Amino acid sequence: AIVVLRDGHSVTEDELNRLCLDKIARFKRPKRYRFVSALPKNSTGKVLKTALRELANAPDNDNAHDWHWTATWTAATQTAI
Image (tube, rainbow, N blue to C red; front, side, top):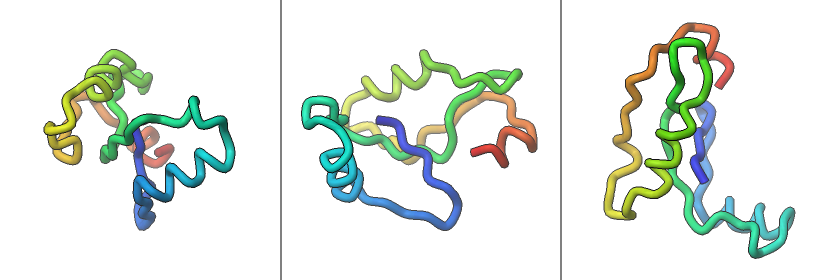
């Protein structure tokens, strides 16, 4: 799962696992979590799903925290996240 945290909030993978196990079936729980600063979006503000799939399928040794998106941002889309 790709996780974007709101400013001032924090969560660990263990906390996400417990939340998922409480709310959904075990087989539906994400196998791993990738924390990113923002979702990749195109110039119209739509999420780039292909970029999300690439990140989700990247090897674990990649540093997901340093993932940088090249999408264009507007003030409206930044506040929506």
